[in-house]
Image 1 (cartoon, rainbow, N blue to C red):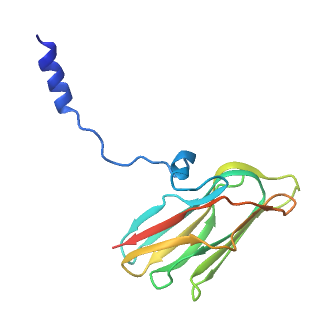
Image 2: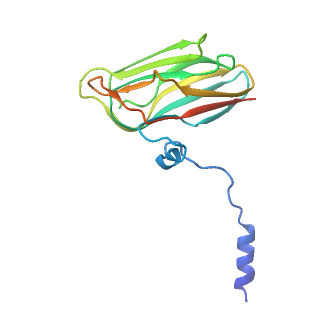
Image 3: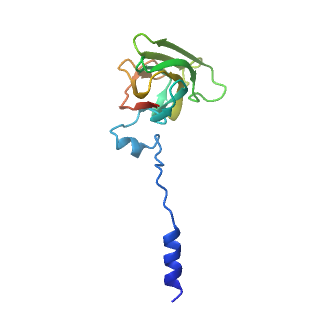
Length: 175
């Protein structure tokens, strides 16, 4: 007799969350978008910013095996975004020597990023990792895509190409 009103009170007061809790590094989540490892993605894949403010696009590798070096070519709309800076992610283990160079080609609308281990021929990494963080300044309201271009490549310790099975797309929403 008391259980029914108590049950109704508890169920009626429960508010279910409506936010999305998807993890961009989740293989099942990416597979639903047609992206299979090894893959390059942006995390988060949608970034909101006010016009005139910076936004950081974090580039991740999913499911790498024996990865030694990376060349990323990220295309963007130069009328809506400007590259402010880029820095290496946590791709390399602490203490490992590495190189990181980026070059912005703003008139063509892309940025090149080169990063690699330096030293021992056997150094490589596996799994998911943050490769680079690119800071863009938004200059125009609207939706702008960030895309990995065909020149993007991954290499192993002997400089052999590693097949990329998926390329994610990033979206910058500037208001």
